[in-house]
Length: 499
Image (cartoon, rainbow, N blue to C red; front, side):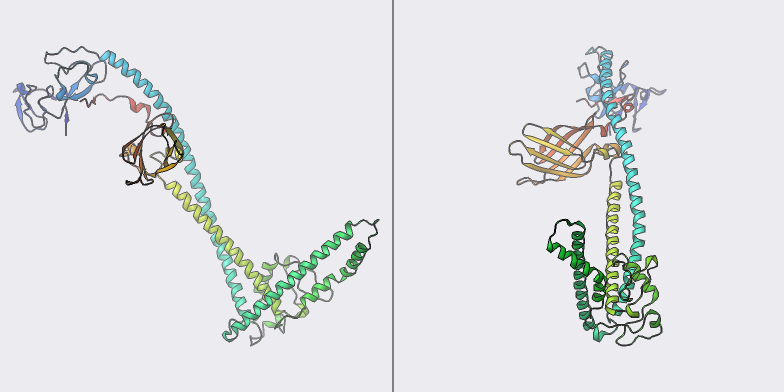
């Protein structure tokens, strides 16, 4: 490893001896800078080019001190910016004037200009960092809200699942699932009854529609216009209306295939054991659950004069069996409707849970993503910039896709998708972005892009190069990589790699 030499290291001891900086040898003080390399590390020749790999210190009063490679010392060349005081030409063969004052003035001007645009970019970067913090905080609130909703929805799902389970058990009991030998017969009868129930419902809807039309006709017709057909229709409507409720009662009492009526009401059935041909007893708590579920599905009807027909009374949802008996078909239909409703609501809640889980996964991914040491790249994500080189328009979407569009035929070629940061360690790691797995070149590799960023007050592509076949280098400016302006202040000394 090359060593950097300083004047304070070169002092002889009391015996006019000097020890190499790697402590490997002690030589006479007169052998230092004698144009012959005595020390293995080359430290005895800081002012000559006798030893490769060492550096010479230029004090450069009035400007910045610096180090230059020792092989350029006493090479007869003046005007080195890194050694503006001319101290590198000390053998007397070449006289180099001290130019540090002029060099310092030019450097100060350049530094001021650089600090200006770096300050502008850094201010934008600081704003982006603050906005990113706010956005991530908002994402975290969203995640918490989703997680809270998920807990509630899962509890609600369990409630509906319990209700479905209860209704399925009752449905199985009523359909004869406890009797394997009659299972198929029970299923066929159930399907037949359900079809008949649907047909009756369709008839009711048709009657209701006709009644509504006649009602509107009676209300809106012109009484001064004597249309006999209209009068006949209204007269028929008036005669039909008193029997309207009776029609529904008749539909309710329509004979159904293999309809099994229970012999006793709910209270009596509690004391009657289940026997073949009779459904199992119906508990009061189950009946309350079913009627509660059905209240929004079935119309609320008042009991007709003869007591026939099912009805619901106010909020307490009391019910009375027709002629003090349950219709097996009607009760079975109630169970099916309630079961369908419970399943629909359970499935709807499950769908909401799936959506919440997807949202949680998405927002967690956004929070976890790497947007830089201070999340400065978040505000630039998917921001796209372009560079027109005359033949192609190159596009780069930050943390996204890179592409190339031809002026000739407008074809668009995929150059790669963002794959990661490859700049080095710390903040430098984010100075280079790779975009991989673009469209494969003919008889060549997949296209790829390396975007190399430098500080600027705007995000823009400066130029595009293709050093290797189908491998593109984009030089890009952006506030996202601007350092603090204070970091531009020069150190006390630096090394110049002059060739």
